[in-house]
Image (cartoon, rainbow, N blue to C red; front, top):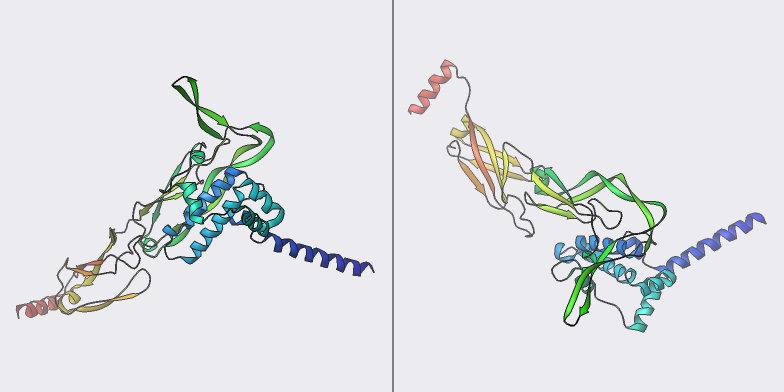
Length: 346
């Protein structure tokens, strides 16, 4: 009997768990990558970081990114609203839908983004009032091959992170500009600190792996901004990590704008009698190089649309510019010299 009872209990727990999951539907906290107890500021930071990453204007034609952006916006709309968040925590996604139907609420994803960032991807006043830690600048040197094909790099970084500490603190997370009238026609403006009592925290050094996505054709000197990945403050937010892209030095291959310039070696016999070569590009496709005439040292061959992808311009590329370098033999035997002279005299 005891064994049968355990089976029934297990079955009941599984059914209850399934029912709970059906009620909750989408996990908005997981969508924004925050804990269920996340503060309003943490939710705001998470939305800003993800919304900028997946915004359709930065991912044109990417349906997956558009879907992620819609999910992020829906999650932020609910979790940034105290009433909707309370309903969601208690009744799940279906409860929020019923709440919106009764109250006539609900906004378009782009309305949420515009309200948060403004029309020019700015930052709203509340976010601007939050003090942030120092920005960190990282110079990242990449090979021409990585810049041509695009890649994802994992970078290890030592940074300050928040850890819980004992006790409470009156934190100074935010400042608001307040205007008050001190006399008829006279007003005074001053900064007022606002924050509720918070759980105490401390900053410790931590190590984390950051994934940096490099798009094909990323220009030399381009800067990628990772929000909230800079240094952090106890009372406030984190700064930005700005990654500056640099092209690694290469003696025979160089980048000039969107054009790829290559110094290509042929021997003297090929320069005089002609040649046919197969050039393997960075992504593995083959380009045939051929000249049946004499090739002069320093002669240039330009091949359209075989250079770097043009950043933010789909299906467009620069040119491949090849400069031929003729390699002369270091030594000729006496008989070889005689033959060369006879040939050239004719």
